[in-house]
Length: 520
Image 1: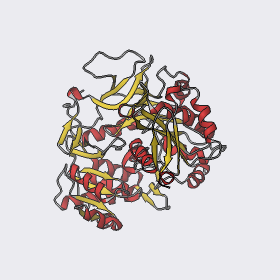
Image 2: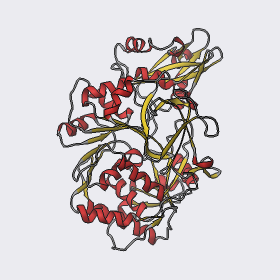
Image 3: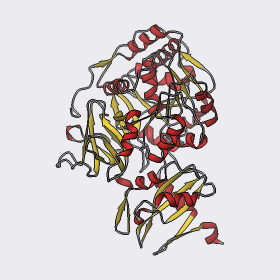
Image 4: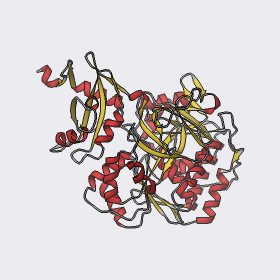
């Protein structure tokens, strides 16, 4: 398979949704954190109303249309409506400021944005034609919508932007459909009508993909706008939920809040978006049982790229390779993984290098300020992740190419250090970044979020197993780590935040001086 391989000939999004509405009717499709619900029939009616309205406005298939909505029932039916109309959905984070909205619109070429009344002025300031979501889904005309050619641009999604400006990733409707089918094919079990899943992260990313899989099977989606441990606990204790999506950042927050509790009952906790460290997994296992399932996904390639079920996770952690890292499992059907550039000889088992991939559900390419850029020849994509393949063919992620720290002549992956600190009981999270140093090249620094008594002792005990050059030399306490809309910590912003509050005293024994102290 390569980037020129034609995707699915056409996708009948409208027909598929009408089948679900006919099959499940008044059964609840989704509910939000406020208790409002939406049936399958209502989802179909509202989504088709959106599609017909946009088509009547003259928007042709493949036209980029942005959406700016919080996690809500609205976000679901607007997303479905954009698919039905054959448009290129450009979902934006609800918290984006005006300059980021403007930049995303400029790069994606979106001129129309669907949002709520409260953000209409902000969107207009960004130069976009605003449509209020509540006004365009009032009723359905019953019109028949034609299938969408598979090669039509279907979604423009932004990368997390942890290393700079987010990039636009373009996926056709055909590749998007293939990704949705592969997601269902790789589930550890198929949801049954009425099966409930709890989602708390941004709908425009992982939560939206799992929503599609659940709704295709007649399941019920609960979509919360953020993580509230007390509300989550009440839902889990009700015994009515079968699954939950909790990336490591969300899982860490829940584990910290539920420490010492026993909350069995879930069949699966889906996790992904970033590596899962052993310490965090062990704490989660004590609370929820052996129900964590890992996938590896990229904005550039619809999840899953690799999978690791809960029955295989304990064994994987017990078999960590010399390079360390976090196991993400085996490639999903139709996915190819290479360690090192495809034009070079394959790396030996256990040898670390950049992870490259190609897959049938992979995006068509990237959109930058210079225009559209397809993936590498033969369809390969450089992920920017470092990894190894073990003797059983499992992929282990060991860090990011851009994040490697060069200190005292050594190269250190900050993910390895963070893995040793994952699941600390004396803080919410410990993140690793570096500061530029004339003496050391870079200095490894640990930033401790919401520290409690004894954090330094716990941290020291955890890093003692690491080589001395990998241990943090400096430490900063912080009320909240800087995170992007997907919940990932931005090391770049973390470094900038530290330097706005402290001055580095460089040398063989570096130190940090608080700005207030220095100026006083």
